[in-house]
Length: 324
Image 1: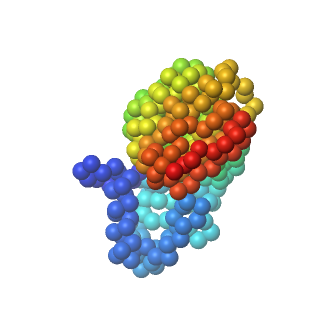
Image 2: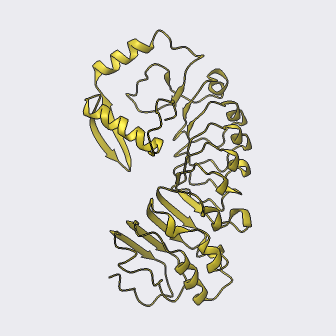
Image 3: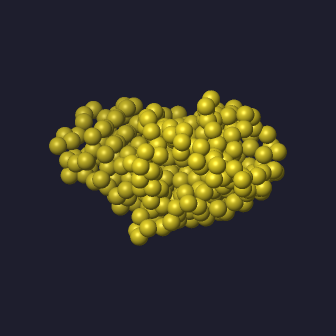
């Protein structure tokens, strides 16, 4: 998708088209030895296919048209055509390869990203996952108007996103799973109308970063909503419109035990009642809830497709709902 190889197909999302293309290539034996680890899919390309692809691209590949940079990668990782594997990260890469579509800087122990990242105006995929020391991102990130995927998985010290994140109009996937230090979302996240994947939503205290920002986002897959103690009342909770998000399959709701809410235990129940999910949900997790009972929607009619329920830290709840 980042390389621009995919064409829209009816009502299918581009990610779904990409999966169809990948499956087609797999069935034609382009890819082999498929293995799934920790939610990621690994596979190998046959030597003959690799050699053919290399011969087709080698004549036209140069530093001026390199489209993809992978730093380090895997021990036996090879590049094809307009992609390049380098052994270490250097800021010069951002200046030399100005046509980049894909930049993989995962697991490099980076402490910060240079402001020159904003000069890569063609960038569509930026992978910073596993950089355990990054605490913030440069404000120049908002210049990446073509960015479709920002991968921040398990950047465990990342505490905030740039305020101008809402200007990334092409963003489709904001991967925030494992970003436990994230204290709030940037303002006006609702303006990212193309957003499909949002791994985590940290409720903020200001109106522009509260839970109502989720209302009109058509999200897919899974999401963790944290700092629910900051939701003022059930009316604000209803604005999240979770019951209409039919493409969400995994939902996690978390209250921070270190922050004291300014409401009674009965009001906590009203907030959770208002966060009723769609019946397509397959996985539900509730953590740190301070109400005296769990919501009425926790029954078979709403959770009919759920195969996994995890409840933890709900110290004031004395009993479970029937769930049938």
